[in-house]
Image 1 (spheres, one colour):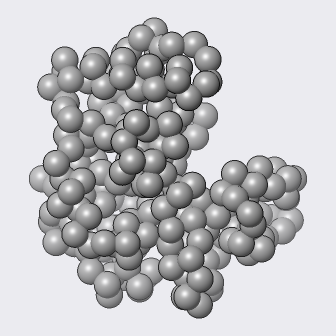
Image 2 (tube, helix red, strand yellow):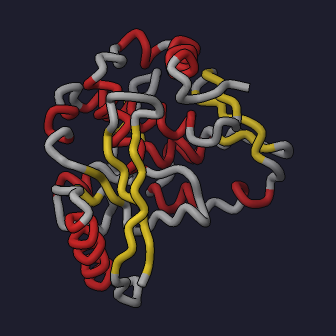
Image 3 (cartoon, helix red, strand yellow):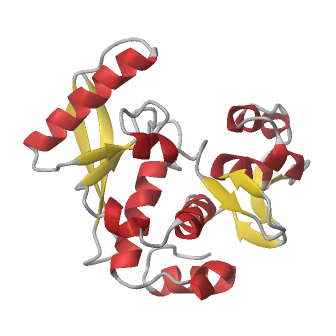
Length: 224
């Protein structure tokens, strides 16, 4: 048995995302076929808890939409007009005590190559993020990643929120909260909830300070 979280939009209250940890049958192995069996088991178990339908957001998803929304694949338009993946934007914006941001990672050959760059593990403590001059604090931990992901979804199609709202929840089979904290499934749920509350628009997403003030006012990101 294993456990993974399911993230559901909750526009009724902060923090706008409801998290349900679901126990399910894990199928050993990291081959795509095995992971897809685990995804099916996870979704079946969640359905028994009343959460359905669920969209798996990862490169292992059986849904074309789910694969396209993976942070490795989802494209973000930068201030200079370039198109880069959310993952490359996240990794390349990290600033450590002994180096960074490594903005060359924005344009490496793949998102996987950006994530595995050795400088990300040999440059000391993460202290902030710097994305084309927009500086985000390292705390709260998910603020910057969520902003990138939500911004990318909005840029691709603001109406995508309606399509995603058809789902009762979102999963990411490779996300383990014991090992990491950022999750594309959680960010997708946040995007839906904020959209339903009419808390997203171009001004908010272009103005980083406005965005942080908005989510702080609602209690989502306690800025410190």
